[in-house]
Length: 88
Image 1 (cartoon, rainbow, N blue to C red):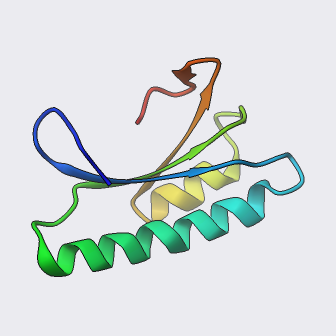
Image 2: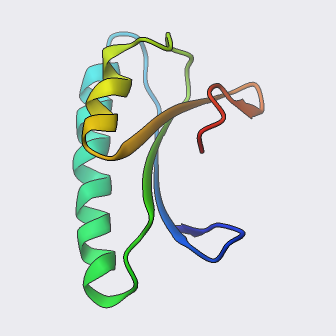
């Protein structure tokens, strides 16, 4: 959990993955951020966002991004010191 510059809580899960393990890691990350959000929101102001950050690049049209978006989760990648899509 992190507090952004506006003072709003954000749930962030970082996953290491390979091409072979990406689907498994995204599924695991989705379950984790949804549980963290549920637990955090029970005792605090609701968290504004949930984010999953991967350690490898992926295509902008990768189905994992749409899957996460449909569950109100942002999926991005942190590679070589920057976020691939700048969404986190």
